[in-house]
Length: 134
Image (cartoon, rainbow, N blue to C red):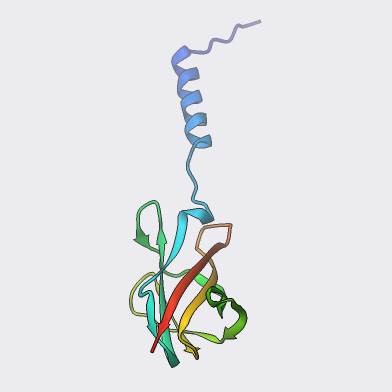
């Protein structure tokens, strides 16, 4: 019968690899944030709302996210049932997403969004408040 011998250096090296693999940091949905490009938007039937999606860890813009849910309502004014349509429009700036809407009344509007970011399992959600000004 032969005895096997494990080198302490080999054991420590293997342990370091295992620890590195198990402590690797992965992003979570909470690592991303929607931000308004402009807090005040011109009231009217052709209003444009622009939001920026950023990685909070680096403050870098996140391009190519798939925004699949949007809701714009007047909840800040106590009128959550007052909603309006939201239509995605092209944007030339990476990480900026633009939407055409009808801000029929001046005042506070809540914009809720949900998106999928490439490589992330969880959904990124945001809730922003903007002001429609005449």
